[in-house]
Length: 454
Image 1 (cartoon, rainbow, N blue to C red):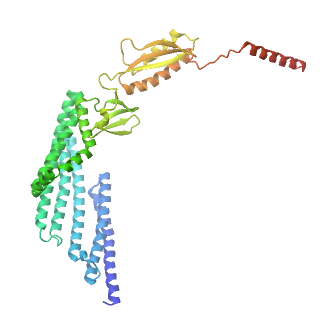
Image 2: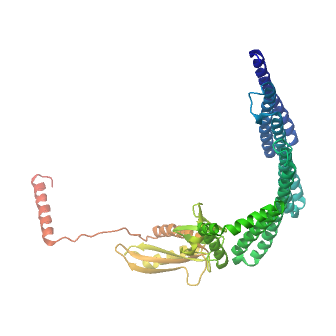
Image 3: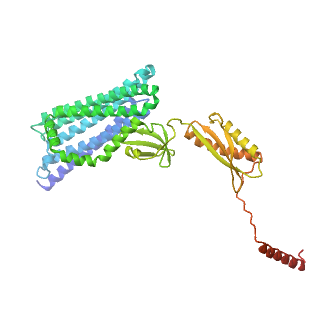
């Protein structure tokens, strides 16, 4: 082939790519125009769908241009391009691209329609909300599963797998269908257990942590059994392989057991925490000098939310040897001890009376026999130490209440002439030093008088 023919063929392929690029921008304009009409009134969905479809169409059209150009160049220069750029493979790539675009668009369209229908239906019949949300997830899952099945089917018909394409397709299709049924079963089990556990938790709030832990275990067991049945049903030859591996892998299992010792320890510790309940979900605890709330107890770790909204992910086994202060277990109420010093010249009875009145007036004060109460604790260097005892419903309330009480006590003391002292020091000098200082002062006075300074 002469140079002129090569240049013409390269130019023709470039024109094909340019044509598909222009076509992409044309589709882009039309797609945006009609999608805006289709999703009129739903701004958020409209923006999401338009951006997604725009990106998909632009990418697909440009790739189609490249694929058609490659097909043209492969036919023109068969000796230049590798075997995997044959026309059959490029055709398969084109079909898969079109399938991906269709599946994505159908998924977005169905999601938008279902959400719109759900909102209208829930307003009229709120009891159908849960069912419609489940239906939406199942439909979304099925759309993508069908897309994967069609892609596998197209791949099985390609020359890449000429002999076993049908068997591969049927096996993968069966596997995907089995996983779909397992997913639906797990979701329904989780939904039913969640509702049942909610009812039990209302009657027995103390057992909420145990119920949630058992729900996760049951859901995990259901998923494991479902996947195991699907795998051994679709691929029966794996059963013999797994049996052989189990028989021959005794030594390996010992090594893996030692390697997974910490994981097993965390799992067993999680079970012990759920059953013995040294702390429960939503309990206020002190862990390693951090005030935390137990946010969740999982199979392997516990999530603690600190007072400044950090998350501590703590392996469950640590709690078997760690001392934890639980502010919520048993009696969640908290005593609030506050110490304040007043000067020796202050009226003690009045100071203690003011402290008690401030505590009684606080909106979070928990009425308790004998409280609030003020008492003298000690005679300190600079003043007399008084202690106020009050009570709050829980630890977070007690923390904030203590800050408020200190502020209000200071205001009341200032208004009633009660002095909060600061350190004072009196120096007692040796008598000889006093005489020397006195003599020095007298001599300075005499010099001032001599100079007429008075």
